[in-house]
Length: 401
Image (tube, rainbow, N blue to C red):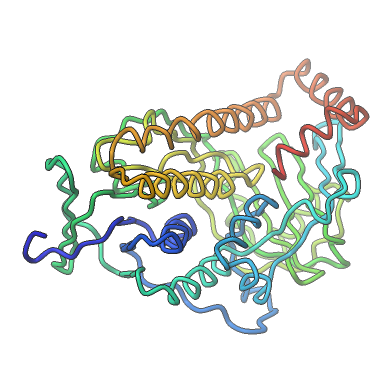
């Protein structure tokens, strides 16, 4: 080993849900892994907090498949001990018309359709699990300043603190604005949706009854997502840039009024609102997920519109497949950083990711259209799907698988 360099079987850039879960998956299979995260360590979740400002404004709709993977990692029980909001029903409607569709877990012989979990809850649970693995390390507040992939069998990494690492495989799990992706020149296809998403937590006048609500409005979709407390929901309101600044600037009282008006009486009344945050929306897909000794996962490889909450589920599926391929290579005494191994991961994931991105794009374009013919067709389509059991069942399986 080169003097002055710390070795790890894998170096993972990014200490979010994807990076942490990949480290644990690899650690359980005997790999050593070092996670490097430029940001500070997150705050620990306050025990028993129930006021609106105690809830993370960023949440994920974790499907049963994601829950199963997190269970395999030993993490799901930690999450449920903190807090998770199961949802058994999903109601979707066109705010510009009469079309609507209702999915229920009972229709599909499933206990739930999924769980709404705050991102910091998932991250905290992953950090707790990671601490029990002696072959895994996590370095906070230490940005990478140099990546050297010029050598044939290793990657060299230098961080802001002056620490140097060497590894046969570098993983970019550092989010939609990936440093690894941009630094190494991965080509992408990307465009702005010219929307901003406002997120936060709201209180309801009555129970959410474990139901997700989503309205497709002329200015963008609005979703209420049930939290572990029966009268609280997380919300994601995606708004065209022409109106997002004005809505973001509203007082809490005016914002609540605007939200209730947008929801059109189809949900329990919103009566309170916690802190709000906003971020721009765009789609980005790396043309290739791999280059020699480097691989991208989750949002670093593909960032999509949040209207169906599928981003993290695609990311966890990436992690699961990559861990399988690296473990298979190791067990066969094959170099797990070899391009043949990495390309197998890419082949297994790219098609599914592109298909989901296409579906999200179609929803975004179709429900964002002001064309009267498109409005008629989408309202007819929602009603037809709701009354056609095989099609409805297929759609639901795509969302919860």
